Image 1 (cartoon, helix red, strand yellow):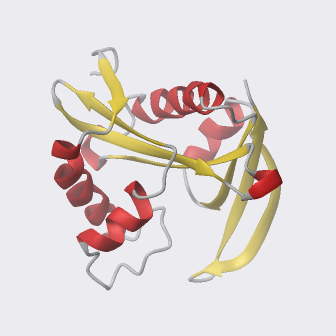
Image 2 (cartoon, one colour):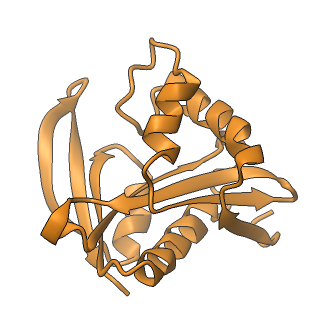
Length: 162
Protein backbone atom coordinates (compact mmCIF):
# COMPACT_ATOMS: atom_id res chain seq x y z
CA UNK A 1 0.00 0.00 0.00
CA UNK A 2 2.98 2.30 0.58
CA UNK A 3 3.49 2.76 -3.14
CA UNK A 4 -0.16 3.06 -4.13
CA UNK A 5 -0.84 6.44 -5.73
CA UNK A 6 -2.05 9.00 -3.24
CA UNK A 7 -4.10 11.91 -4.53
CA UNK A 8 -3.85 15.17 -2.57
CA UNK A 9 -6.27 17.90 -3.58
CA UNK A 10 -8.20 20.86 -2.20
CA UNK A 11 -10.99 19.70 0.09
CA UNK A 12 -14.40 19.58 -1.57
CA UNK A 13 -17.67 20.20 0.29
CA UNK A 14 -18.80 16.63 -0.45
CA UNK A 15 -15.77 15.41 1.58
CA UNK A 16 -16.47 17.49 4.71
CA UNK A 17 -18.61 14.77 6.35
CA UNK A 18 -15.86 12.15 5.98
CA UNK A 19 -13.28 14.63 7.26
CA UNK A 20 -15.44 15.38 10.29
CA UNK A 21 -15.98 11.69 11.13
CA UNK A 22 -12.26 10.87 10.78
CA UNK A 23 -11.18 13.87 12.85
CA UNK A 24 -13.82 13.20 15.53
CA UNK A 25 -12.47 9.64 15.86
CA UNK A 26 -8.94 10.96 16.40
CA UNK A 27 -10.16 13.47 18.99
CA UNK A 28 -12.17 10.77 20.81
CA UNK A 29 -9.01 8.65 21.01
CA UNK A 30 -7.12 11.60 22.54
CA UNK A 31 -4.56 11.55 19.74
CA UNK A 32 -2.57 14.58 18.72
CA UNK A 33 -5.03 17.41 19.24
CA UNK A 34 -5.87 19.38 22.39
CA UNK A 35 -9.65 18.84 22.18
CA UNK A 36 -11.22 17.10 25.19
CA UNK A 37 -11.65 13.43 24.20
CA UNK A 38 -14.47 13.07 26.74
CA UNK A 39 -16.64 15.62 24.92
CA UNK A 40 -18.22 14.64 21.62
CA UNK A 41 -16.84 16.86 18.88
CA UNK A 42 -19.63 18.67 17.07
CA UNK A 43 -19.56 19.30 13.35
CA UNK A 44 -19.56 23.06 14.01
CA UNK A 45 -16.52 22.75 16.30
CA UNK A 46 -14.74 20.65 13.68
CA UNK A 47 -15.62 23.11 10.92
CA UNK A 48 -14.37 26.05 12.99
CA UNK A 49 -11.11 24.27 13.83
CA UNK A 50 -10.32 22.49 10.53
CA UNK A 51 -12.14 24.22 7.66
CA UNK A 52 -13.17 27.79 8.36
CA UNK A 53 -10.80 30.73 7.83
CA UNK A 54 -8.04 28.55 6.41
CA UNK A 55 -5.77 29.45 3.51
CA UNK A 56 -5.98 25.89 2.19
CA UNK A 57 -7.40 22.53 3.29
CA UNK A 58 -5.86 19.51 1.60
CA UNK A 59 -7.33 16.02 1.45
CA UNK A 60 -5.39 12.85 0.71
CA UNK A 61 -7.21 9.90 -0.80
CA UNK A 62 -5.88 6.41 -1.40
CA UNK A 63 -7.86 4.15 -3.66
CA UNK A 64 -10.71 6.66 -3.58
CA UNK A 65 -11.06 6.71 0.21
CA UNK A 66 -10.02 9.33 2.75
CA UNK A 67 -6.46 8.80 3.96
CA UNK A 68 -5.74 12.10 5.71
CA UNK A 69 -5.89 15.86 5.62
CA UNK A 70 -4.05 19.06 6.42
CA UNK A 71 -4.87 22.70 6.72
CA UNK A 72 -2.84 25.88 6.34
CA UNK A 73 -3.47 29.30 7.80
CA UNK A 74 -1.40 32.32 8.80
CA UNK A 75 0.24 31.63 12.16
CA UNK A 76 0.06 35.31 13.09
CA UNK A 77 -1.80 38.39 11.88
CA UNK A 78 -0.41 41.50 10.24
CA UNK A 79 3.33 41.65 9.80
CA UNK A 80 3.71 38.05 11.02
CA UNK A 81 1.23 36.61 8.53
CA UNK A 82 4.06 35.46 6.23
CA UNK A 83 4.53 32.44 8.56
CA UNK A 84 2.06 29.62 8.00
CA UNK A 85 0.68 27.20 10.56
CA UNK A 86 -0.46 23.71 9.66
CA UNK A 87 -2.32 20.80 11.20
CA UNK A 88 -2.33 17.23 9.91
CA UNK A 89 -4.06 13.93 10.47
CA UNK A 90 -3.89 10.47 8.92
CA UNK A 91 -6.68 7.96 9.43
CA UNK A 92 -5.63 5.27 11.87
CA UNK A 93 -5.74 2.28 9.54
CA UNK A 94 -3.45 3.97 7.00
CA UNK A 95 -0.74 5.19 9.34
CA UNK A 96 2.76 3.97 8.64
CA UNK A 97 2.29 4.04 4.86
CA UNK A 98 3.90 7.40 4.08
CA UNK A 99 0.66 9.41 3.93
CA UNK A 100 1.84 11.84 6.62
CA UNK A 101 5.06 12.60 4.78
CA UNK A 102 3.15 13.20 1.55
CA UNK A 103 0.80 15.57 3.37
CA UNK A 104 3.66 17.54 4.96
CA UNK A 105 5.59 17.80 1.68
CA UNK A 106 2.42 18.89 -0.15
CA UNK A 107 1.65 21.47 2.54
CA UNK A 108 5.15 22.94 2.27
CA UNK A 109 4.76 23.42 -1.50
CA UNK A 110 1.22 24.76 -1.10
CA UNK A 111 2.29 27.18 1.64
CA UNK A 112 5.07 28.52 -0.55
CA UNK A 113 2.65 28.85 -3.51
CA UNK A 114 0.34 30.88 -1.24
CA UNK A 115 3.19 33.30 -0.40
CA UNK A 116 4.25 32.00 3.00
CA UNK A 117 8.00 31.88 3.64
CA UNK A 118 8.04 29.68 6.76
CA UNK A 119 5.94 27.02 8.44
CA UNK A 120 5.42 26.67 12.18
CA UNK A 121 3.72 23.97 14.27
CA UNK A 122 2.58 25.35 17.62
CA UNK A 123 1.50 22.34 19.64
CA UNK A 124 3.07 19.00 18.75
CA UNK A 125 2.65 16.55 21.62
CA UNK A 126 6.07 15.44 22.88
CA UNK A 127 5.01 11.80 22.37
CA UNK A 128 3.83 12.32 18.77
CA UNK A 129 5.66 9.86 16.48
CA UNK A 130 5.43 12.43 13.63
CA UNK A 131 8.20 14.40 15.36
CA UNK A 132 10.78 12.16 13.66
CA UNK A 133 9.27 13.04 10.28
CA UNK A 134 9.25 16.78 11.01
CA UNK A 135 12.90 16.72 12.05
CA UNK A 136 13.89 14.62 9.03
CA UNK A 137 12.20 17.23 6.81
CA UNK A 138 14.28 20.03 8.34
CA UNK A 139 11.94 21.43 10.99
CA UNK A 140 13.73 22.79 14.06
CA UNK A 141 12.48 22.67 17.61
CA UNK A 142 12.23 26.32 18.65
CA UNK A 143 10.62 25.78 22.02
CA UNK A 144 8.51 23.64 24.27
CA UNK A 145 5.87 24.13 26.90
CA UNK A 146 6.01 21.70 29.83
CA UNK A 147 2.80 20.24 31.28
CA UNK A 148 0.75 21.83 28.50
CA UNK A 149 -1.94 19.19 27.97
CA UNK A 150 -2.78 16.57 30.61
CA UNK A 151 0.76 16.78 31.99
CA UNK A 152 2.43 16.31 28.61
CA UNK A 153 4.78 18.83 27.05
CA UNK A 154 4.15 20.28 23.62
CA UNK A 155 6.91 21.14 21.19
CA UNK A 156 6.99 24.07 18.77
CA UNK A 157 8.57 23.51 15.34
CA UNK A 158 9.61 25.98 12.65
CA UNK A 159 11.12 25.75 9.20
CA UNK A 160 11.87 28.26 6.46
CA UNK A 161 10.33 27.45 3.07
CA UNK A 162 11.18 25.98 0.60
